[in-house]
Image (cartoon, rainbow, N blue to C red; front, top):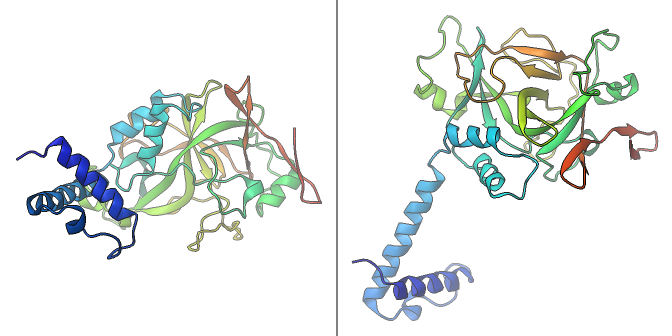
Length: 315
């Protein structure tokens, strides 16, 4: 028999009252609901709520749901309902695989995470940072040397990227790879069980970001190296090895930032999409916070100067 509105109201009050106290303390259900029939109905109601919560927790966020929001909404408007939905989707426990492409050695996919990269000036911080950041790509030699041990400082490459030495972006998530076993080839189908097992996918040390237009919409996908990977303790530590900037399992050029070739965004990508890079930057880059401009409706990159005293200033 369906519950009455009075019963639902009573059960919610009982639940709220019991949650105020530690387990086995506070008033019992029998004290709060003397009627045996109502008490049995209460436990059925609680059980149904638990089953619904469990089902919701382990129901994967669909790839379509995540992709459409990334590509459709204004990513500057973090107070909008649609952005809240996207943020919630990015923090869900389960999600459908989001393939990015493949090479002869590995498959690549996105693991949603809006807070994987942090600005260089906060490399020791433990707090959560902004999902929106900027990347400065044309750094003076002294600033590049501060960020990474660079073996090719004197490279004559151009890395301006056509936007005054950098761009603003919104983080999408970690780039994960699935290496082919020698001679085995890739598993058949994008939904094969081995591809659905998250334990089979390995971190690459790079994150996928969406370069944003001046009005906040995603334009293209880029990869940026994580210079301060997370530790098991939850903190961060700067990369100390000189073997930085390489994707595992692939003999690709060393880089810190590059554009993903092929489809501009997530739509249209699969494991059959060739995983290739262009606009490759080999030199260290610098991640910075954004500052509000245009009466608070837009963002611009900060240019951070490191001084001997350790202070920072903005251009």
